[in-house]
Amino acid sequence: MPELPEVENVKISLEKQGFIGQEILKVELLRADLRVPFPKDLPRKLKGQTFAAISRRAKYLIFETEKYSLLSHLGMTGSWRPFDKKLKHDHIILHFKSGVKLAFNDPRRFGLLDMIDTKDLARSRWLKHLGPEPFAESFTGESVFQGTRKLKGPIKGWLMDQRRVVGVGNIYASEALFAAKIKPSRAAGKITRQEAELLVVHIRRILTDAIEAGGSTIRDYRNSEGKSGEFQTRFLVYDRAGEKCLRCKDGVIKSKVIAGRNTFWCPKCQR
DNA sequence: CTTATGGCCTGTCAGC
DNA sequence: TGCTGACAGGCCATAA
Image (cartoon, rainbow, N blue to C red; front, side, top):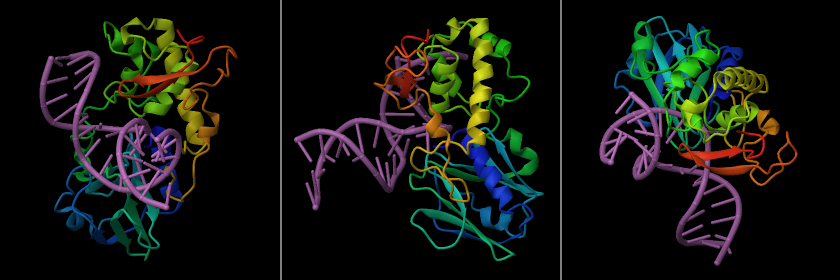
């Protein structure tokens, strides 16, 4: 579900609600697993710890304590919210010393929770294969150009491959390629240096705008205060199949499954 | 190494 | 009003 802007907004909203500095008194597990089993020692390791920071790496949200980190992935439908009353699909509830509680809810259960020693985070099985953050200095037009040479798969798949660059999922891949005027089906290896440069600029711009707009809500996404995003009102191609292109006013937006997911583009102004 | 595919789950919506 | 099938913002294992 959530891509980088959505996860970033969950992080911001959790910070805003004062979850940093909260000491965990009790961990209430309502089931044994999500995408993978919860570590058996998860409650024992969390109990007595205090959240020192909440961070994001790629689409992972990480609650850091001095010793351990609770790493979470929202999958398609995961959400964190201050616990008030039990809802269907609540899977874990953290009880804090202040009396406040925090619940993780995930209907489809594509999400993930794991406990990792904070010092080992970057080397963990979840984070070690990840590519650069889109805002990292190392992510440049030149690095995209070099990293795509000779690849035959579609550029859209490359963008969504978290080993290449993180945080871009199905929606923002279509939007960024539209902005850069590149057809999603084009072989990654055929992207020119100039196009790679444009792509980086637009990925950053779109992600930045989407973060500021509170992310995109198609259906499920809410931040931890229950607020929907607004960026879905500014999609230029995503979910617009059959509509006139908003840029060239001539092409009709097409859609087709590329890299395993529905993809949208303008056949007239994307090459 | 790269790329394609299937599977994990539930909920919702369109079409019958 | 059901029922069925397709589809949904992600990721991983597997196979070719």
